[in-house]
Each structure stands twice: as C-alpha cells, then as structure tokens.
Length: 260
Image (cartoon, rainbow, N blue to C red; front, side, top):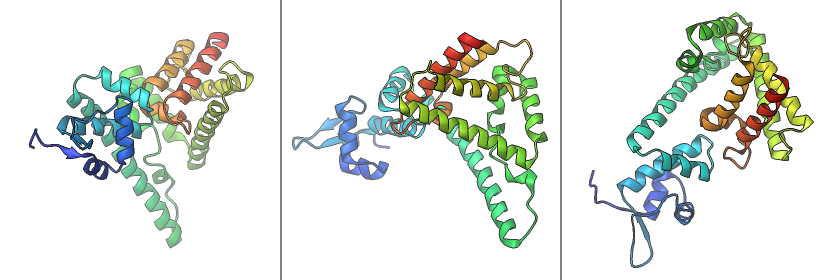
C-alpha cells in the first residue's frame, strides 16, 4: 500500500457506505480529521484516517454513541491491537450467526416438507455457548459446566420460553430507559427485581450459588453492561450510546444495595 496516498471525501464515503455529510460531522466533533484539505476546501484522507474510520464504524455496529467512541479511541494507543479485539468479536459473531442460519434453514426445510422438527437442532446458535471461554475465565470451568448442563436439559418449549423471558426483560428495560424514569423508581426497581430473579435462576452463575456474593455480582454485572458493548447493546435505546445500559446499571445497584 502507498502510505502517501490520499482519498477524497467522496471516495471514502462511497467505500465506507456512509455520506460526506457524516464524515464532515466527524471532523467537526474531533472524531475523524482529514489528513489534508485542498485549496478548494475538499477534504482528503490518508491510510491512518481510513484505519480510524474503520474502527469508528465497528464501534458504531456495537451500539456505542459518538462520545463513547471518542473515549475508546483515545484510550487505545495501538490500532492493530484494537482491531484484533474487534476481529475476535466479529469472528465470534460470525460463527454464532452461521449456526443460527443453519438452524433456521433446517426448520424451514422441515416445515415445507412436512418433516418432524428436530428440537435438539432448532436452537443451535441461540444459546450461551459463544461465551464459554469468557465464563470459564470469569467464574471457572464448573460454572460453565453447570449452566451448560442446565441449558441442554431444557425442552425446546422451555428454551423458547426462556428466550422470550430474556427478550421481554430487555424490551422492558429499554422502554423504561426511553421513558426517562429514575433508576430508584418503583417501576425501575421492579425491573431490577425481575433481572436478579432471572440471574439467580441460571445455574453456574455466582448469583445462583449458595453463599455467593450476589450483591457484588449484580453490581459488577451492571458495570460490565456499560463497559462491554456486546452486552450494553442489549439495552441500547433508539438514541444509541450507553444511556440504556447506564440506566440498567444504576437501577441494579440501587436494588442490590437495598435488598442483597
């Protein structure tokens, strides 16, 4: 690659699937400056700017708002290391989506052919196994084994009901955040109670363990929702960013301090 090469703002907008207006906005807020500006006022971008834009778009895909993206970019000095982290997450998601696609395709084929549905195959890619390494690292191999055994013991209907419960909880959290209610309000605290009951119902987590530090676990998990965009995206409001995850974190902390 020619390290001295530059691309016009129109070229970059087309390549990245965005608009020149968006790129100018990124420049105005200090998120992505052009490498040079011609005498005619046209912006141009070099190799480093392209790498930075790729990181911005990846972080946007993870549900982060522009202020949070700026913080992430400022903290991470090594672009290659940051992209390696993004790549690992993308590959993880790619594998999960591939499994989901195969699962749904199999269901469609069975339905159209009048064949018997294979319940054990219908939820491949929808379970928690994509987080195996992380669960083992955080809470130990036994924690993962317990939760995995529990999940696989569920019937297809029970798995569907559990997924619906998770979906309903996430939907209600987002609705509450968008309504602007206070984390300490009765409505938010009712959601926090549901959330903790859900956590304590999953074997293998510290929240489910007898004698475990449930309070510390719940508070720490709330912090992780904000810090880790993979989980924070589950509570992203229509405005994007981490406001939804911050609301969940604050409500969980209030509940934990008062009840756990």
